[in-house]
Image 1 (cartoon, rainbow, N blue to C red):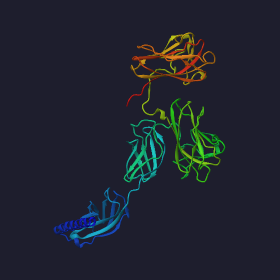
Image 2 (cartoon, rainbow, N blue to C red):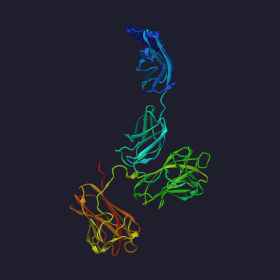
Image 3 (cartoon, one colour):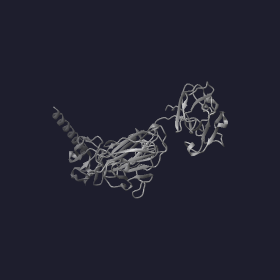
Image 4 (spheres, rainbow, N blue to C red):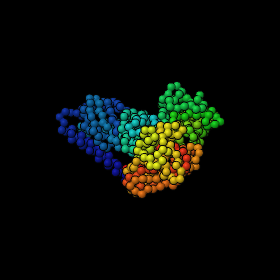
Length: 508
C-alpha cells in the first residue's frame, strides 16, 4: 500500500511539473526549448541543511522551476551560475535536483545532503569570570552559531570562528554559583565540560598564561622547582600555556607550587578546582596528587590521575586569611602531570548575602583613644586604641580593653544604633583574644541598646588566641546598638577587632 501511494505521489508531482512547463511554453514567444540546458559542475559534493548550492553550466536562462525532490524551491540566476538554498529541514541523504524548462524538458542532478557536524567544546580560557569579562571557547564545528548561553542567559559573542568563540559574561547571574556554558549551532548543542563559575577567580594567573620561561607570575615554586616548567605543546597544554610538573617522589610536598595569597574570609566555604592529566607511559598515569592551603595548612584527600583531562575539585572552609592555594604534586616519583585553569571561588558567598550595617566595626576611624561611631558607656580610661601588630587582627587599629571587675557592664563600649526591623534575626560578631594573665580564661558578652529592652548574650570564655564570637538575636526595636560588656574579669586585658552586625539577605 505504501509503495502504491508513493508511486502516485511522484507521478502527480511529475505531471504537475510537465503541465506547468507546457502551459508556460505555450505562452512563450521565443523557442526556449531549442536551448539545451547543461549542468557542467556543482560547487561541492556534500551539502549541509541550509547551505547554498551553486551550479555552473549553460543556457540556465531557460530554467523555469527548480525542484529538490518533490518540493519547489526558489533559485537565482547570474549568467552561467544558478544558485539555491537548501531548506534547514531538508532530508539527510541523496537528493534529486530537477531543473524544469519549457515543454516539460527537465535536467536532473543528484546531490548529497549530510548532517551538520555536532559542535564540540574542548576547553575554556578560564573556569571563573565576573560579569563583563571575556571567555574564550575552543572546540570544533562552532560555526553556524545560533546562540551561546551562560546559565541560560544569552552571552554577547565578540568573535566567532569554527574553532574559537569569544564571549562576554552577561549580567543577571548570581555570583559564585556554577553556570554551564552552552553553545547552540545549526548542527546541535554542546555544553562546556567541567564547572564554570560566574564570579572572580581569587587566584591570579590561574591559567599560567603569564610568566617568562618556566616561571609563572603570581606563583611560587616551594619545592622541586626544576620539575615545574611551562608547556604550550599540543597534547600537553589544556589552553594556551600550561604547567608541566615532574613528581620528585616520596612526599606530596616535594613537588609543590603555591599561589600568591588570596583574601579569604575565615569560616567561609571555598571551592578549588583545576584541570589535570598525566603523561601516557609515565608513573603519573594512576598516580595521585592533592591540594593544600598555607598558612595553617588544610589538606584535601588524594586524587587519582589518568591520561585524560579531568577537572578535580576540593571544597574547604577557610581557617586563615590571607591564604595560598598549594598544589602538592610530588608523591609519585617521575610522574608527569599537565595542569591548567586553577580556580578558587568563594562558593560559600553565592547568592544573596547578609548586609553589614555596623559603622566602624574595625575601629580604624577615630583620634587617639577615641572610636568614631562608638561611645564609652563605662570604664572610659580602660578602653583605648592599639596599633601593635600582634594586637590588631586586620587594618591598623584595634580596641584594647581592661576588665574593671565585678560586673560585665563596668567596662562597656557601645556602637551607634542602626536601623533594624522588629522581629527579624541579626548576627553580631567580634574577634577577640586575651593577653596572658587574668584575661586568659576570662569572660565577656555582647548585649543590645536602643528603643527596646536590652538583650544579653551568654558569657563567652576568652583565650590568648584570636577567636570569633558570634551571637544571633531577634531585634525587638527599630534602632539597635551593639554593646561590648568586657568588665567582669578584674585586670583582664582583651584585644577586640572586626566587630560586625549583619542584616539578613534581601529577597530577590
